[in-house]
Length: 158
Image (cartoon, rainbow, N blue to C red; front, top):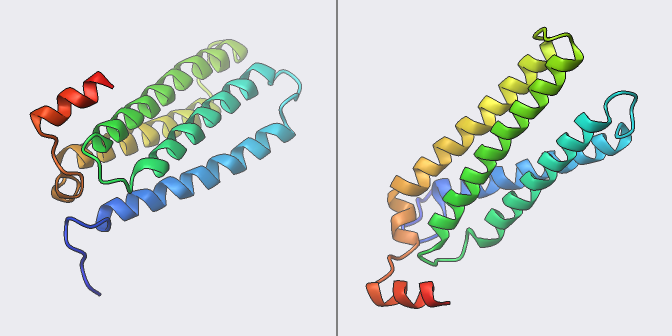
């Protein structure tokens, strides 16, 4: 097994790309499952919230997968921003969904709250770890060349 040089797309970048593809597939499966139970009794708001969150996740992950192999200096920043958006979406979804569930269950914590908390923490940790990778990685630094001051001026003008 040969290790690709840092200036080529490979290693943890390739692994991250594969995880994004798997997350998209998983999220699409959730969307299909949500459509089957979308209009269940008493669950309409919760299902629409879950559908909106999952749709946003699919969109963001698609944007990441679409740009990750482009050796452009702005790509790491874009990806870290997308990961930040996923982090915020997970937190907001947890907050809204938990309030909804607590309201439905007379303000008692249920197993469903715990499962949502676990999924939210997992997503937030995943985003934090990969944001750190894109900020500190040698491969990322080498694969996505640095912008000169002149290039930055042109990018901000566009």
